[in-house]
Length: 488
Image (cartoon, rainbow, N blue to C red; front, top):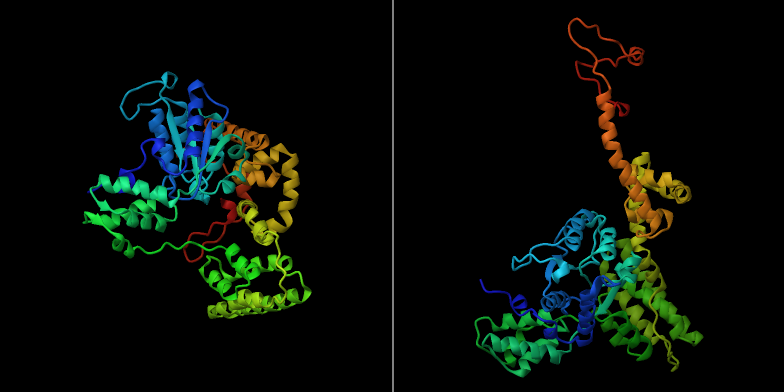
């Protein structure tokens, strides 16, 4: 089986990573800071869109520094226990390298710990992963690289990721740089490819080097030469036109049909698009008449969206789209054009920032509801508010919630309005863990200390006075009486 070209031609050195010389220099400087001991920033974060070479850069760095690599990606289990077992252990202990030569880290052998897609942590599958990552960042004795697509999504959950790491952002390489790299691969594989076809593949990749290599491999299969006609089979990758393009055509270029087409090409549903237009309409239409006519068209679009929701007939989306783009665009009669920046919808911004908090709140209410045998709605309306005040001021309540209710660091942090890596959250979990460990042997000693009741044919059985006064539940039709809740 032939090796995949994306792996076969993965950069072996940082100098082979295309399109990002400055980020590669910053990454090398951070790595070299480990030669003088443990630096202040023990972890680096590589930020950028998929396919631009983040993972390849980390592996190339390890090759340049002659480090071993310990990698965890999204396909691995990334719970707190898994990260502690793999990454934390690797960060504190020596091991055999790929060459099977044992060499202590003090003598120069280090391991690069790579956490791929560190911003994609999902629910129970990655339970407790973020606190373990925070601990890894602060205590590791080996270099750590986190690879993320959305740094903001990760940093807003923890101050350690933002304050205790070196952040390095990679950019999409230009088409000419990608074409040059494809030329070297084609020459190595014995495929004669002209500059025009290589440039076509590079432009079609939209800055994704991995996609470009795969396209070249697919076109070269069973061939020894490529020309421009070979690239015609490539489908143009959909480049998402965002709402800024739609708004620019509507408000700045007075292009109704262009705005309508741009909305169809954008990866945005009409319910979201109308929020964008509603947010910017008052700033773009300064004349009162334009503003009134614009909101009339926008209100008609909203009526169609309401009918879609009520009737579940999505064919009306096209009418709503026409009204909110072309309709609003033709409502403008004046020639005045705004020079202010286009605004992101405040509603979406607030909902996005509170999404993780709402998820944590839902999980917290569910656990408390199960513990108190009540509904999550009642917990949210009647119990959660007072419990917040009690937990914030009573350490014993916090320990009880962790130990008995089973709260995670994110949930306790939400309850007492603290970050998951704060001192109060760490201390609560430390005490709860100690008590759980101390309860186990004590329970065993108590069980051994209770003498067994003598039994046998000559020993009369003693009646329990509590049981004596209870009336037995009659047996119905020879069936065993059903247990009630208090039997458990």
